[in-house]
Each structure stands twice: as C-alpha cells, then as structure tokens.
Amino acid sequence: MRRSISQREDAVSEILGVTMLLAMVVMVIGGVFVLLGPFLEDIGDNREWSAGSVAATQLNDRILIAAQSPEGTGLVQQNVQLSRSMTPLRDVETWTIQADIGGSDRTIVSLEGSLVTVSSLNRTASIVKITDENSTQSFSLENGSGNITIDGYLIGNVVIEIEDIHGTISHRFVQVSLDGIRLNNELSKGNFEVDLINSGRIETLPGNSIDVKQFPRLRNDILLDGSSRVTMILLDLEISASASRQMTNVHIDSNGQVSLFNQQARNLILEFDIAGDPSIAPQYMHHWTGDYELFLAGGTLDDYHDFGPYGRLSGLDGITLYPSNIPFEFVVTLQSVEVY
Image (cartoon, rainbow, N blue to C red):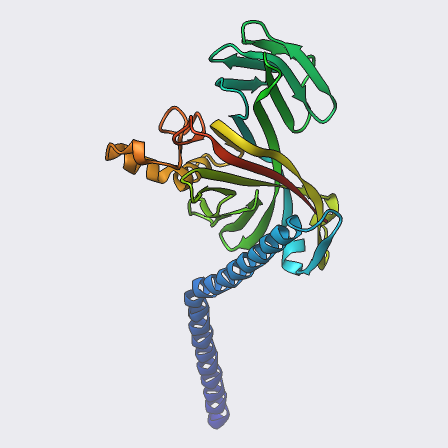
C-alpha cells in the first residue's frame, strides 16, 4: 500500500516537472517571438517597400515610353503589385505658363475663375482670344489693358492669346491641369506612397517627410551662340476606373501630344499649383532655381543665365528665365497617356 502511494506521488511529481518544463519552453518561445517581432515586421516592411519602389519605377519608365509613342500605340505591363495599389489623382498639378512671343511690348495675363486681367507695358494689347475645351471667345481692349469677365467658368485647359494693334500675336497664356497616379503599399505602421505626377516621382514613408525623387521635365540649355533654349514636357495621365481593380495586366496607351509653345519668347513666367503637401513646391523651386541665390549673394546676377524666382525669392510669384528680356527658344509640349 505504501509502495502504491509512493508510486503515485512519483508520477505526480514527474507530471508537475514536465508541466513546468513545458511552461518554461513556452515562455522562452514567447519571449523569442516578442523579441523577434519588430525585426520580422521590419523585414516585411523592407520587402514591401522594395517591391513597391521597383514597381513604381518600372511603371513610370513605361509611361514615359508610351508618352513618346505615336497616338493610339502603347504597351502592357504585368505586375500584380500595381493593380492592387493604384489610385487616380485628379487635378493634382496645375501649370500656368505665359510669355511674350511677338512684337516688342511686355504683357501680363492673370486668370482667376471667370475673370481675365490683361495689362501691357506699352499699351499695345488690342484683342484677347480665350479658348477652352468648349469654345473660343474674342474680346477687345481699350488702352492696352482691362478686365474681362466670362460668362460661366472655363472648362479644361485654357489658352489665352493677345493680339497687338499691329495684328501680331504678342503674348500667349496657357493653363493646364494634370492628373497622376498614386501607388499605395501597406506597411506595419502606415502606407508607403509613391505619386507619379507629370513624369515626376514623389515618395512618402510613414513618419518621414515627402521626398521628390524625380522632377518634371523642365530644362534650360545654353546653345553655341550663348542663347537659351527652354524645353518643357508636361504629362497628363488619364486613369480609367478599371485601373484600380484586381488585374495582372496594366495597359498604357498614348493619346498623342500637343504643342503649346514652339517659337522665340521673352519675359517667361512659370507658375505651378500642387495639391496635397505644401513641402513639394519648395523642393521644385530649389531644384530649378537653387543657383540663383548663390549668384545673388555673390552680386553676380549679370552673369546668371538660368531659372530664378519671378518677383519674391520665395517663388510664390513663379519662375522666370534670367535675363528676362532677352529672347530665347521656347518649346512646351503636352503629352497624354491613358492607363487602364
């Protein structure tokens, strides 16, 4: 009887020992997972960031290829990463471009809603022609300046041309709104976002500031005779509703291109309005006008032949080309690409 009780006590002790051992193993394993959890999340985030960054770069490259192609042609990209994260961005950038393209006057045009204001330094502006997606309207000016109120609102891209008293088109004003694409990649602490806008690439990591990785295509080339050639290629992306559905094939087709400027010009004014984070515009300004401040500080602006702020140094008034009154070759093209 005593032996039986002793055997039962030994069995219970063994069971308790095994239970305690298992509890310790579970605690150790749990602690390991707690310690490794952040590292495993980082590994997953790095994998998602890498895949999203590569997919965005490839898509942007193919969009630029399609934009250069003849109208109606395109290509197909196979990437599941794109189809599950693609979101359209409507009217994300608005560019206003104006310059004197004839005569010898200096003209400035502003557009606020349905109000058009025209002023010319020598008062030679005579006829104002306003074109939007729906119609073309003409108005007469007195004394080379004035305000014009249009019935309703202008639709889509707007072109305003000024004809002087000699019948010469002396000034052109163009306002273009551009759509883009956002690629969302889910991370453990938020989204890694890549915006493809106007051939540029803007990235945002959770907790980090917005970083412009690739800028729109605006450049100034100095020719052999010392003059400037300014080229700008705008890119508008038309994204259909089907682009955000689950699919493996992303179609990218060219809708052709339109020439907005292709002549000698003077007195350039470039303005851009960027929806979303206000830190993007200063990065654009610094990219194109950063050297201006160096020449200004050194007192050598007479030797500066590149982009600089028009008006205030902050760039709120836009960008111009220095020297502003010297003619330069000016080429602006608007490309359109459909993604579906």
